[in-house]
Length: 179
Image 1: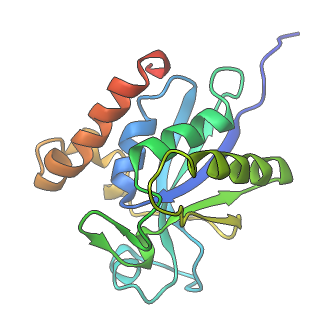
Image 2 (image 1 turned 60 degrees about the horizontal axis):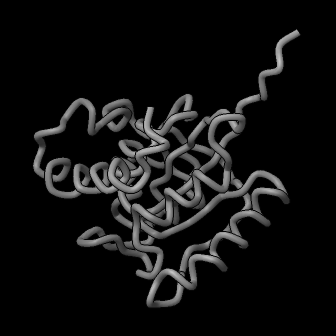
């Protein structure tokens, strides 16, 4: 009999999903990261429709992780370090509800942890935190070309100027959590 813990899942939105995916793929204990859409009303969202802002969906990542290696709290601490949770429906030049800061929880424990971390982060950030905390809704996987986007396109302009600095910040801040 092995003493392995069952993988858990965190679903987060904090701007463009390429940024979050690239960072979490480098975190020790993260087993898999997938980009997708959640929190809207369109039953068949596409990237173009989500970017148009009319679907209500946020760009999110679904992170499968080993809680024996990285906790849900650790996942959230990384989240609040690599994006700005004080800008409503915006991350840098990415503007719209699809870029909102949001945590989709799957259990009362995840909700409680999310709210506790947000309360703690209020002492770190200058402005009020606008991160939404919502129950999980239907998951929609993003198109295949969005998966592992940064790894496949590191020299693309957005990746070089927006994603790469977030990955570098993660590497510098969380050296003890790198794969």
